[in-house]
Length: 322
Length: 206
Image (cartoon, rainbow over all chains, first blue to last red; front, side, top):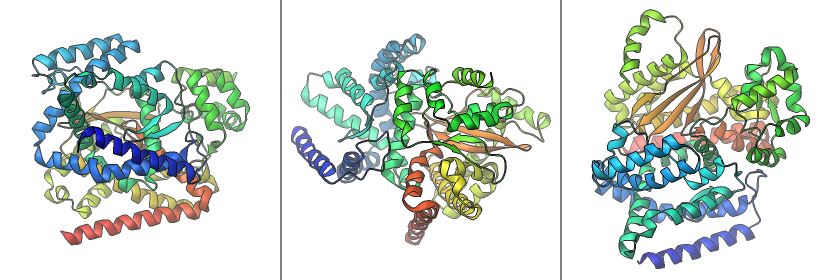
């Protein structure tokens, strides 16, 4: 089948699934970060079906046919191309050292690494980074927005959907003039990416009570971590534990007061305020008795204050104590 | 790399009774990976052997009470002691299975640990490691540990930025909303039993 007609068929099916989701009365559990859950669930099962019937079998075939060294080469080749715009994104995020390192990676891998087939740069100590335009926007303070499951592309947030559009626009592979070469490369890259994830399938399948929400929550956590380059600020719970001896009771009371929301806003940037607002309806703080009888440390049920960093935690602690 | 190998050699003399959390995680990880790489049964997917390994080497270092409380969130307190006990038992089964699947899937990996700093008197720390796999992107695995009494116990494992524990919060909360704490326990039991069946048929097929 030609790629264009395949794409058209998939688009039609996705549209049908989306309509079914919208018409089918949304099975919404009221998660404030997932306002269009009905639509998303329909799209999720559509993607699952697509994966089961076409993408996964192809990726398994690819894994069976091509020995590991070949798959590594393919993966490295595309990884090298992506380093170009990872460098751009690091630059846009003001991370000059990382951007320079990314450019170094491309130079080394494209030459010594034979067109990127061998990742010499990683062995030489130039670490591979993970950046995209969604993360750059996040770094700039754009909030997540609603969670959305896109056809074929899968989980995104509203912000990351815009990021994806820019990613696709900036994708060097998409700009290759020779159409057949371009399409073959796009397909090969998709298969290679999928093949890398084959091992995770079973783990998620067995771990999840409800695969849809497991994947959703994992996606949201992972993006938050990536935006902070693997060092996301600790959740509010840490503040309460740190200050437990002197301000434990005060903190506990504070956590239950609506006042807390107002106070926190003073310390959070725009995206965190948005998170705070969206999380408000459903998620209240939890007082958890973790040891069954021991004095209860206070923990958060979700992460309205997710974006707070350590310094700000301490600032709030100072405000509380005084 | 070389640096902490030297450190590892020096350690038994220095910190025998009370290992620091990073050393604890390193030792357990290395020991377990060593066994997984040598043991043909585990590599062939023998669930019983994997289970034994986890029971003896890994479980004693985990605080499942705390993990379950974190995953259940605000509903934990309205659960009776009996319900809490059932929740912990079922959640432990689920997590152990997830963890053992991950372990056997990534047996070709090498694990590198990131520099660890700890202030004196700290009782809650994060130990960070990275799994480097041939032909794939590195995956970060971070461990949250808490000091209870004299020993450090892991209460959260964060893989690629995703907490294996708190990732259940949303699902657990909606289960409790729909069917109460007993509803959640029942869902977990059903899940665990269905997985038992799957692995049983797998063994029979072999």
